[in-house]
Length: 270
Image (cartoon, rainbow, N blue to C red; front, side, top):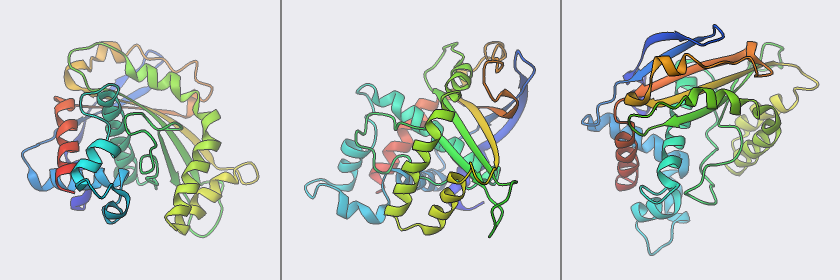
């Protein structure tokens, strides 16, 4: 695994819970080490480039601001002004799940969700993570489209079932998909990423060329707020595609501290 995603070596499956309706819930723990400067710096760069490619900074930023000032005031959610902290947690969780799907589960996951956000402190509308598996050079019924809804709870010592929130909100992905694919396509065109455009094009042809459509619901918890007895009450029966719904939990200690440190490094090392 390259240094760019070496932080995923910290992600270990520690358990599998079972939902109230009998569905398996794989549980991963992010055993992060903020003192490992090499991995943290590589992660921070990878994270920063979701919002703004390094080579674009000099052209996009206000010329009176440093790279760090621009990122902190106009690109990144605010550290303390609401809803900045919760937006930071949500973006972190979505990017982490995207990394998991791309580098551990071998999906292709275009990263277009954050780089042209109009309001830094707000979450981007649309499906949280869209991932693809495509047969090379042909359109196949075995091609796969996966849409993940991701919820985060990075505050300490709560007992909310955000996995159930992710399951419930995943129901909306059917309605949001066309708009989300269109937004992805437009951003890929702006980048002149024609391979990415061809990927999206294949799945926009789904009515004429069927594929495997799957869904996911993920909860990213700080460790003190992740309780098996709470998430085990989750139920998928009301999801219209419950038989195609994948569940996932990721936890880590003091996640909000980690998240703020990641944003700090991302800005200071730009």
